[in-house]
Structure formats: C-alpha cells, structure tokens
Image (cartoon, rainbow, N blue to C red; front, side, top):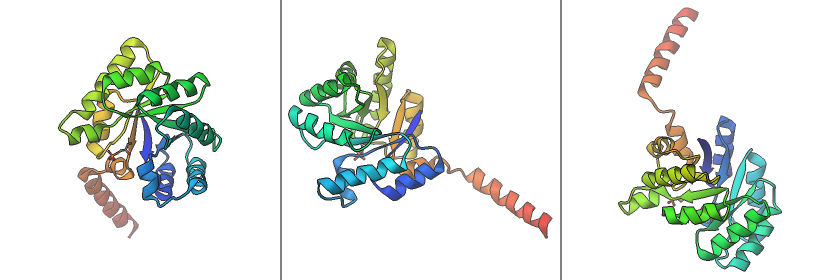
Length: 218
Ligand code: G3P
C-alpha cells in the first residue's frame, strides 16, 4: 500500500518526505485554505512548492463545479508540474471531466466518494484514483473501511485499473484497517503516519539497550 500525506502544509510534507516513506500528496480546497494561501498565483506557487518536495503524484483539486470550468481549471493545474493529478468531485460534471482528462492520458483523482456506485462510475471514466472518505462515513455511523473493502473487491473482480485511495483517514488504526481492506493508497495526516511507530516495548527495549551501551562505554 502506498502512503500519501493529506495536507498542504509544506513542513509536514517535507518531514514525511525526509522519512523516506512518502509516495504522494493529496490536497483539497479546505487544506489549502488552512495554509492561508490566497489568490490564484499564490495557490499555483504553493502546488509547485509541494511538487518540488515530493517524489510522486500531487492531487490538486479544481474549485469549479461545472464541466467546462473543471476542464479549464484542470488544464491550468496540469501546466504546473507533471506530478499534478487533477482532483475532481464525483458528480455528473466531475465524471465527465474525469473522462475528458483520462482520454488525454492525464491523471485524475475522483474525490468525495461515498458509495460503490460512485466508485464504479469513476473507474469507468478512467480515474487513476478513487477517493472514498472513510472518516466522514464513520462520522455518520457508517462503515468507511467497509466501503474501501467493497470497492477494492469490485475493482479486482472486474479488473478495473483505478486505484483505491482511502481518504479522510483520521488516525493510525485507520491505516492498518485500510491495509487489511486492500486499499492501494492511504492518504493520511502526518500524526497518523508517525503513530505507526508507537510501541511501548520499542521504547522500553531501546532504553535498556542505551543503558547497557552506556555501561560498556564507561
Ligand atoms: O482526504 C480527504 C480529507 O482531507 C478529508 O478529511 O478529515 O476532513 O474528513 P476530513
């Protein structure tokens, strides 16, 4: 399973990249707004800065909600860097735009996916990634990881190439559940990724090793 980081924060992206485990980045308008980026030029520069840090796909989401607007914006985003993946909402116009870009060999990420039916349309339109939002489904007492498992099963059975990118991952346990459910990618907050390292026996064992090493060097 690939690891993407779900943020537009350059320091966090750099930290994950330096860890050596990062395969890509996903952003959305809310994450970009959180970084205080304002105006088209600054937004484009910020995407470029992200692309310069990471080795891998960088999802940049269109702001438009109509087909023509999505195509226009997507074309502009693609000029920023070859790593850019156009992120499009899973709506009627969004699916048309996914098809437009996939027909031209461009990478797309179909986002805001909450059902197998939506994931099916994204795959048929040729999306490189489909993004089921697992945390938001859990928020309404639904089963986010269950949806990842269902989509992954359907894609494998029918041979769709679209990758299941589990999004709205909220915590470390979600990452393990995504692995078990067959996600191709999990896009995660840095805190959730670093949480994978936490184990009291590692801390305890290391403290003993350090103490014994020090004794030998006295
Ligand atoms: O990857 C989608 C993500 O940014 C949304 O996460 O926590 O707002 O549901 P959240």
